Image 1 (cartoon, rainbow over the protein chains, first blue to last red):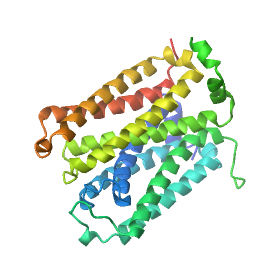
Image 2 (cartoon, rainbow over the protein chains, first blue to last red; image 1 turned 120 degrees about the vertical axis):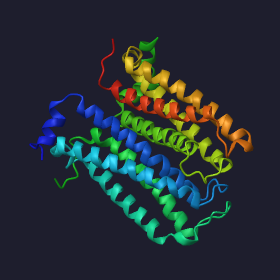
Image 3 (cartoon, each protein chain N blue to C red; image 1 turned 60 degrees about the vertical axis):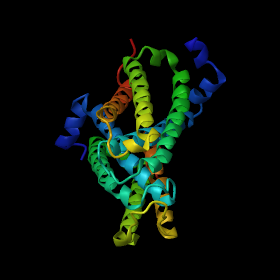
Image 4 (cartoon, helix red, strand yellow; image 1 turned 90 degrees about the vertical axis):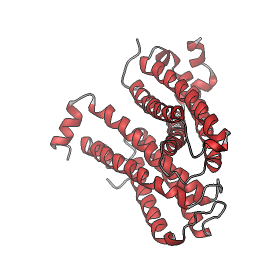
Length: 159
Length: 155
């Protein structure tokens, strides 16, 4: 992986890594902004917004996720031996996985056909918990990501 | 003055404690997600996405963006005092502050328009849309400049 053409491209051009990092941050707000608004609403905040009306925000989050998956894979390709054993990186991947499963739970547990257009109505309790968990998990993803450089040399013990 | 700041107890804590710096950087990234994320979503709404979302309700969400900004003002000041001399001469840092001020003014002005009079809800003026576009661009500029601080040496 570290010897691949992709890794060489990232490592041999000084501007590539900062550009990827910048795109990773842009992807972060594209992912986090809409998902925060959707989650806050489904938790029960801002009831004047109808539950159905926030749903068109979700494709923007998916776009942000796709951007960060792409840039993230490029980071790992550029320096696999630094990322793979890193404890913060591993925990971040675990948090992304859990957040993904949580999003699928939302998709399959939500009664899409009866989603209300009427303001002031809330989702049922289990969906509110899923939305709250989503807020916690995505925030952990951000924190763990920022921690990766400071965990260099702090492995998980399983490398 | 900046040297004095860098020697204060607060600055020393940030510089010397093993986890001080990464914890403040993490807070800065979370604040970015809250402020940038909500501003971006609000701008997208102004530009026509998810047009079913009522502005009355969005006002509650909008207020949360200032909590994100506050988090970043506090964490930003802490990062600054730890190494003020490097930051103050850094061109990307100066650009970042200018873009940040621009974004704050635009977002506040836009919010005044969309949250004040209910009759504007269905017919947003061209100026409101222009503010949404420019504040989105300046938000992206903040991110680019912020990232470059780590790569461009001060004068």
